[in-house]
Image (cartoon, rainbow, N blue to C red; front, side, top):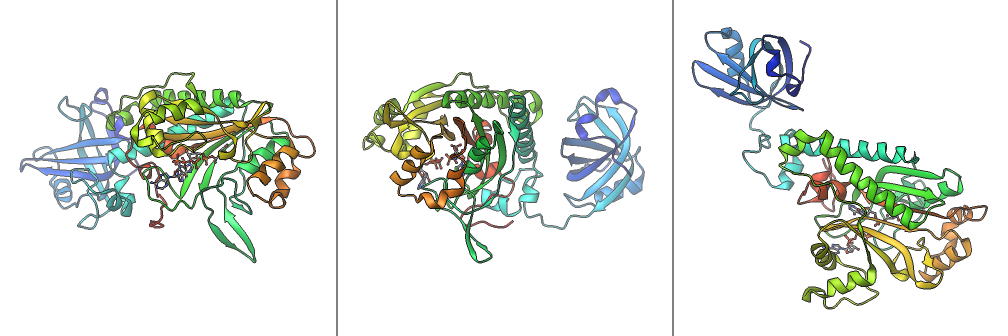
Length: 434
Ligand code: ATP
Ligand code: AMO
């Protein structure tokens, strides 16, 4: 039997048509003279209705012998029925049993028996069957497509850079060392050095959507050890150009998801509000002042990095997406460019959602002598960055860019409690399977 339709593609107007659907046994209800099988596919549910008088006994017996979550194909006739979930039901004429599910199930994919996130992640293949989780990953796929469409329409070329690398780029978060023949190597923390080298290569505007690895030791609701970064780098551009592209990317993604994922948003009970652009630019000094209005952040001093508590106070005060700009030079990465007339402040920015940081970026230091000084000021050895520095010696345009965490973008858009819910198979300190 070959599937003809997904559940959502069948409508009451198809009354009388013959169709074949395939999927999982979501539920069986038996009322003696009348039995129902609710079949679930990726797109939703189909009510298969079996009045004893109208449906062959073999089919009813087969259905009654099925365990929940078994896989079947069912052929039948569409019948318009206002009381059924999508305004139609299916009266079966054929059934093929493709896989019998063992019992008991590791999880209840109907969600009627709630489970802890850890239990869900242990049986992730089953967890993803639930309509809510299917909706999250359907939206994730659309979100990534929207990013690709938008960046490519804005003249960015997609690139792929190595994930096995020789150096750190993001001080602070630790590296994962790997065994690489007889040499020291690491998993990449960011495509930072490589996307910048593409500016020297003349690629002009590039983006990459790929994995980044961070050996974060702590367990939080917003840190993963393997995350997906959406990276952009733009030549002949300033940090302001980069921020404009970033806020427009966010707005485009929200609009796209609102338009293309209405049914998934409904499953998740989300009334998606598209953030208004331009986002407010809050200078770092003002951000510190806002944070210090809370006793929890009274200890904060100018020059400190903004911790999670400060992010929360500022986020609650501003209440929508915003940028923090003009950071102290010495707490930002070496590749950020300082203002020439006030070198203690740099052209770096963070894009914030009221709940957390979504993205970091900057105008980059493209003058090699100043870049080497930046490395030395941070006790980094320029020799370790030779391959990178060389690309600045023979014609490097001014450039700017950003890195945006895909999981945090999805987490904040769908108001997910834990960033792990935005990854199929999250990696954290304790989890490397499944
Ligand atoms: P960046 O690496 O650019 O700071 P981030 O988003 O990982 O980005 P934040 O989430 O803003 O950083 O957190 C700020 C700092 O606090 C980070 O160094 C982070 O690793 C650390 N941090 C966050 N939550 C915790 C926690 N619960 N325990 C310990 N450290 C934490
Ligand atoms: P940064 O280190 O701020 O900047 O990372 C950019 C964005 O990536 C996401 N992110 C994470 N998401 C989940 N778990 C993690 N452990 C994690 N670490 C980072 C966040 C963060 O805002 N090279 C710069 C970017 C640039 O300047 O272009 C960088 O990596 O959403």
